[in-house]
Image (cartoon, rainbow, N blue to C red):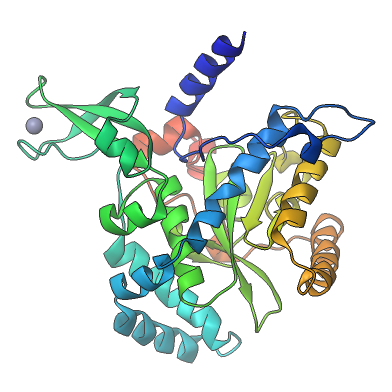
Length: 344
Ligand SMILES: [Zn+2]
């Protein structure tokens, strides 16, 4: 039974574009209580997801980011955004500058890699376990793509989880983009969350000191503060959006799913199991010094999120655009072409 589950998980992973964290089990005592017994698989998954931003704390890693990015360019962009957006603070504009640099110069989107032998296009032919070298650099799995011109040539595309490796490879799909971008935001001095969506997408949130709230950022789309882009622009239905940082975990679904018709049912586990996992991650992350301040911030965010569900939900024009990242075939396969898709 256990083996069957593992096989099924592997085949599910093959179809995804985010790079899941390596599952690590917590002891049952940390996740169970007398009423609800042993923690289920969803509890374990949330605990495993919480490890992604923990990797950003690796000694020397944020310094390496600062050595790798073209800070001069990012700050020039930031100054331009500051002039254009007087309502934003400088910190917000640095993030907007980073978004621009990251998308236009730093990171490359890969649906299928170019053939290293002849430069032709390739098409996905399967997924295998990473080889020892790929594993050492933090690959979770390796896609194999076949050259359209030299069909005997197979191009390997390892999907890396390790943010340090991503600073070097600088390519991938949303998993790699969001992972590396979140690290870069943190290194540039912003409090940062990595946000996981159960329907195969990941993005970033940054705490804006000027706006006094968490702001949605999607590096693949160069989007700043456009939380309704998925539900409205892409026409994506979602069940869970969970945010993780070194300060804890938070269910932020209501920021992205504001109407009943945008929601998918939440069937991964019980709500109690999810709350227990979030509570355990948060407890593990916080110290006695910051717990009080962060709890007050959590309460303010609860009020903000509750407001999204009850009040009107106007959208900005930028939130109504279809997905940019990925080619048309790939987006259509995922049903993320937005309104164009719906109208045929
Ligand atoms: Zn080729």
